Length: 543
Image 1 (tube, rainbow, N blue to C red):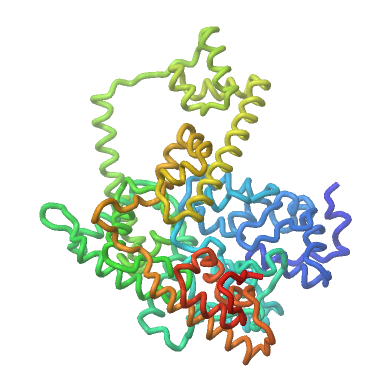
Image 2 (cartoon, rainbow, N blue to C red):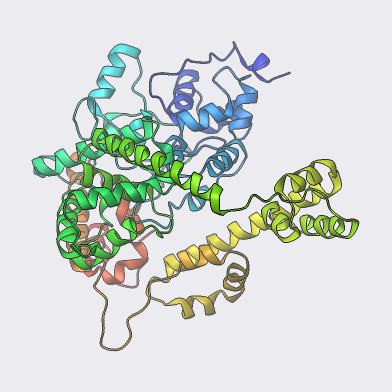
């Protein structure tokens, strides 16, 4: 019998609020029930003291559905409509979405961000909790709660499209502080998303607002398929030609395009999430070329959304371009189909296997090989392989075990490789390979395509030097100013007697990510020493 029979109605289960995230839904129950610790609420809802507490990708959803007897919905509906899976599903395959939902249903979401390509992007992977002050006031008046709206949490959304106000960030969760706590938006626990909202230009604000409209329009507008197929290449190509960004010979006007795109990106960098965007035309040109070329590797959705906003201006114009492309695609497809019928003979794959072939196929499946590869190697149809797996329980069990073992090994190898990349940014492929040779060898043998997509940038050789991707001087000046202004605010406004490092990065999240790079940020390091009253250079700044 479901735990809900004992758990409720002693503990009231609330109804969902419009556009409410799952984290907000669970947090409201924590506040309603009045538990002294978040762990107690976690145990009741998820059966685990830290279950479901991640604000972007909560785990243990299957346990939650079981313990609430499905009264708040099923796993698939909650994951796809109430978590950030709703944002990312528009840009991943159907199978990848199914896998992501399964990940949220289980006990661990440790490698989900890596699988979604979030950790290898230019954007922060921690998804800060965001809220609109006007929405909070209205929600309290109309519903009795200030709560987290899911569309405010979408990457790239920094302006409320309902009230046209900048969103504010929580000083908790994404900063590492109170990671395992249930929270609802409170004004005193929010910080501005820009250093000084009064200094943001009208152009920057309008572009941030326009980008928010594009993000919400794409995610909520049933445009999933276009970002997962070749149609997007055609849409980009047509728009490039419409703008006159291509020469008569078919070559892109790279200098012109890069200059205009860089001007657009610069107006967005008032937001911390966009601080990693290109700073000069050279880097912008490379980044833009990667987005526009059909052979591009996995790209963070936000990069495409910014490109769509810059090229089309609105989601409506992008939708019109989609419709025109679909019409051309259907017309071309019909013609290609008729031609294919004329020149390609119809062949039918075998469905029967000899005893020896059957034995070889079962052995391959027992090793966890992909059914498609096994079918192609044996010269039979995929349906026959599926029937073998369904009819042979022992082989199916071995196949599942082998696949799970390989998936765990792959995830672990990828995570180790990415950690090494992050901690050794200045090293080339040879140096990183020498540090973790076994990991490199495994990835090279079993996951080479992924490895090729996640190699460090080539180091310069000879007198030729690459364009610098990060302006460390500007970053140092910016961060040091933030450290000093934040410290002054903590002392004057919050009456803090002694400042700790965690208090600084709670209000300056990007500072936490730069701990290992302070040797390249002398002004910032000096500012930290000054505000923490530390004078010796060899003193640990982070205690």
